[in-house]
Image (cartoon, rainbow, N blue to C red; front, side):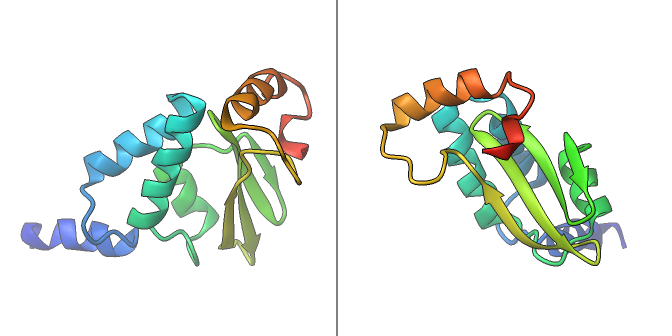
Length: 127
């Protein structure tokens, strides 16, 4: 029975080739890494774990308590911008790491500087 536990964990979070420690390390970088490292880490997390159809509680168990909760979404403040999970009937239907404002024309370095200033404002989640 214990031999099936890793398989159950991989299936529950949609992981096929990722180890739980690799996923945790990438999630750590999403929140604690540099702007670019956070974006790269989130790309790896998306390839390793499918959040589609997961409940609000399952997402919170994996990532932690969200910074903002609404009736139809949860949001985390990451090192690369707001990370929004769109929910319908308490299940994820979409995930978006918003690392630059709409119609951004600047460089990655300029975006990193912009986010460094924006993340400290009270409306950091709403750009």
